[in-house]
Image (cartoon, rainbow, N blue to C red; front, side, top):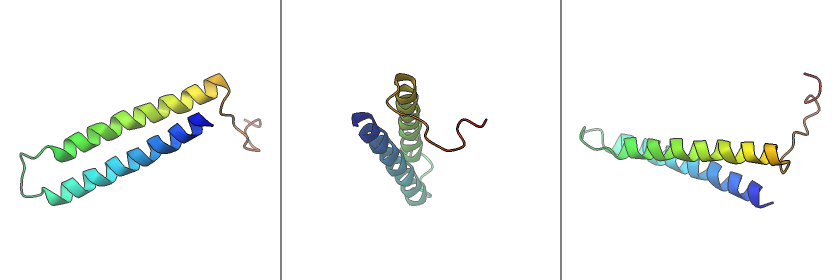
Amino acid sequence: MWLKIVIVFLFLAVLASLSSALFFLLRDMGAPQSKRTLYALGIRITLAALLLLAIWYGFDSGILSNTAPWADKY
């Protein structure tokens, strides 16, 4: 159960970072020296990598499983 909470938290953090990057992009249009958008997108990439690692760990350890009806057909 703890892994699912971590995955949901990381997903929400990725969305928050992406929305803050959009906000900074729109807010800092007149200031080309501002790097807030770049930093927000860097944080998003880091969070997305952590999210992928958490999902991989879940499938590899057996905590997560695929229950889709078409999972065994292909």
